[in-house]
Length: 580
Picture 1 (cartoon, rainbow, N blue to C red):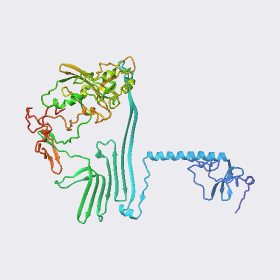
Picture 2: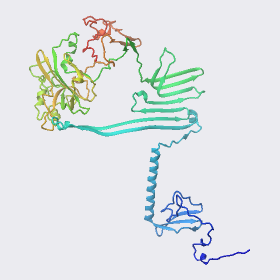
Picture 3: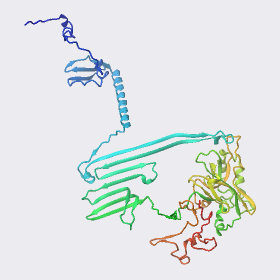
Picture 4: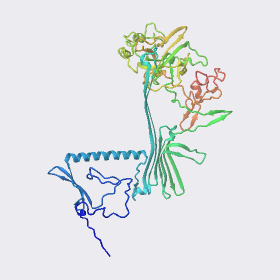
């Protein structure tokens, strides 16, 4: 056996190498293969040059530390293996160190924000489960956890919608119109529970067709051995198995179910949010019963044109179907506050409460009545109209308000100034003899209604207010001319003012389509406490037993419209009934 020992002097010439790889090569050459993710050592310290996420962490005997040198005001970074340095210590000045740390903190902050946004976009909410301890609270609500599972969305639409009409006949102010278009819709579903007894199902949607689609409820379910079987609060129902006492649906209130041995007790204290209606089909037509109370008249929709028609209303209607009125309305213009952005037939108007009144609300010297007293309304019935139009710049929209204040008139009470639109003749109907006006849609409480009308009285023509053609717009300037009209409704309703009487309070809607005399029936009932509804007067000496429908003058004619009561409501188209 022979042993050959080869010693190479170059192997000990450098402290960085213990042997020469060329002398220890294997007989089979090794091919250098590139890795998909090459491993490379960092060149700086662990703070300025953090290692890649693909590299393994340092072993437990590796120690990294940062030491502050107080004398030199420097930070020194050490990296050791055991007690030996395996990297040269790195030093930083005070400003360099904290500048680096601030940059790292800022990068970490934005990284956390980006992770939070990505989690929200994926819809993976963190739902912590809160356990209940074994105590009184646990015995009340059962074993389990507190769970809250919210779901929903909010859709916000915001924009601007405007238009411009290049019509030289319109003033500059009326050529442009527009406004903000903002809409928000929200939908929320929450399933929450405390233990296995108490649940909170909530469902809310702003686009729900009916209020009953929005559910808010607290539901407590007891165990088999408990007296309180069930307790509900919010949207509840009370079904009944029998037909003698019908049940009710869509209630909002409280409901309890108790058990005492074999006795079950169910109680409900709630407000009913639904109605039950019966519709009978007779000969292919639907017969529907309706009920309207005396104070449920149609508000802000039906008006009289002046105090004259209010004072003579009962007289004119006393001999139906014949109308005993010397008045015949010839023309009528109706103006309301422009809320829908209409650009045609729009003007600045001023409505005056005492315009055309023979007995004005305001006393002299603000308004005086001429010595030649007249009994019918007109612009000359008092001196208000002449005082208003003779003011300097009376038709200037910017000066009209102050001019009226200078005359001693109070806004809202005595006059209203607004930018209004003229209604089309299809948007209202009026009775030429009675002097009543009915709008196709009721007004909002803060909208203004003003009119101008012309009528004949014993062969003479009278006018109240100004028609739009009487005061045409001034196309030569940017300002319009103000129209002065008769005020029927102000932005605030005040029962102490005479204008309150001009709104009719005896017109009711039955909530049905087209009415016919043969199919429509009306009864006037008195609800006597504890004794039900009665068609006659159950008390008194003079009217005892008299039909109520006759006492309120709704039954004075028979079916042939002869002056003979027959116990049936007098159906007179255009006066007691508006079928359309």
